[in-house]
Image 1 (cartoon, one colour):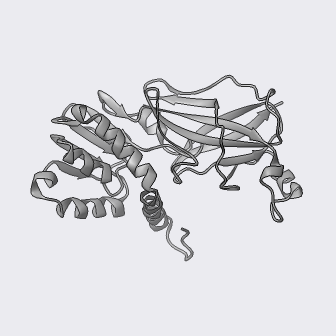
Image 2 (cartoon, helix red, strand yellow):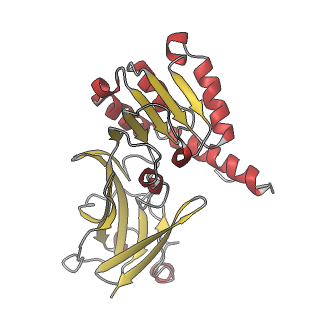
Image 3 (cartoon, helix red, strand yellow):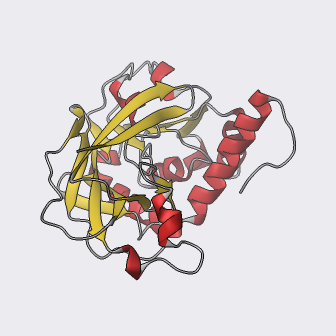
Length: 273
């Protein structure tokens, strides 16, 4: 979904965030995966003080209240989303609504007055770190449990012959050398085995040593895998919220660099020849 008319920068960013969350909630597999993760940790959530970071419309906050959380802070910096979340909470049964407080702030500025037992978030970008995982490394509080607590960017190599068509021809692909393209192809990739980046709460982002030299093919696909502990929560190609990212192969090793901006993280990418 794109905004087509001219708006002030502030208004555009508010509405752009709102539409992004509409798209996220349309990904029912993603929502089910995160709700299942919460239910797996229901004993940690019951009677706990919880936070949903970047809460949007508050879906996971409401689920934590249903699981018996004593208090849930739904922290959302976008005023449109925060207002919509308050409306949703106000329509809940009083026993649930009284547990949830919508806080309009960026998560990194949120200073709770009580200890936080559980933090739930979904700050993953299509390239793992290109959205807001940075925020979790700059919190004003330290939760006992972060859900989910990890993720990887994995890679697959294949032949462009299996994907190209009358439009995306070899000539077109050659012009994309060194460019990462989201959603160029939507076909399911069967093998995303080799991680090139790994993030873990409390440890940050790190590159994973890799060499694609043993793999044949001229087309490279990257895909996000969200993890908690050693368990896969969701991944690109299964949860449509995260598209595969494609590029023409120009080597056997890659380098990613991320720079913090006002709207997430900007990705720098190059082949190590």
